[in-house]
Image 1 (cartoon, rainbow, N blue to C red):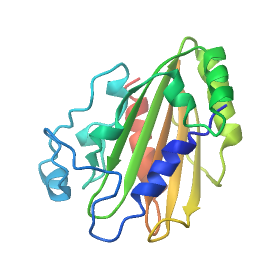
Image 2 (image 1 turned 60 degrees about the horizontal axis):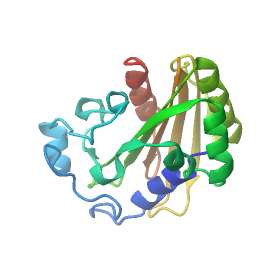
Image 3 (image 1 turned 45 degrees about the horizontal axis):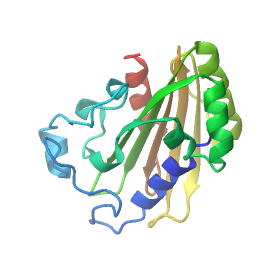
Image 4 (image 1 turned 60 degrees about the vertical axis):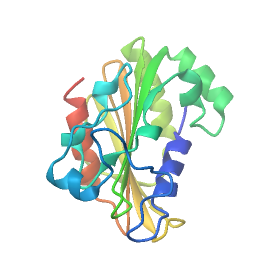
Length: 211
């Protein structure tokens, strides 16, 4: 069981920037993703994320809301130890991940420098669908916030929304957790003053369609 607390804290940190400033934890992406909100919304350059297994199952340029660019320093493949570290109890989380047949994972992080909106996506693959189902069940049990009714994404999903009172200005975080076959995702979307669940759901459905 893991709650991906660190991913959510990344969202908190990124939304805690002043209006018009680039997020503190979001260095301007290099390469084809320029870090410019205007460039992302008009030309939408193709993002070149760090290579790794499951890279194709996190958002590309065309999948992002207008204005968002990749945070290359926060994106890339992750091993079991790194994923377990996102939990409040890393040792217990790593044991459960191994028990559930964890194979590999990939993290994609994105931000809109102009508005402070953020998007974090964690995709994990397991040896069997039963292992992925058990792992997602633990995540859903640990989830907090208001439950949002929405059509199922993949084979099983849950959508929640919660306030981010420590963000400046205060905002909201929407999480979509879902599974398809041997793969699970967490899509976390933060925005101020409110976060639209449809934004996170659109990204989630696009990614589920690729698996």
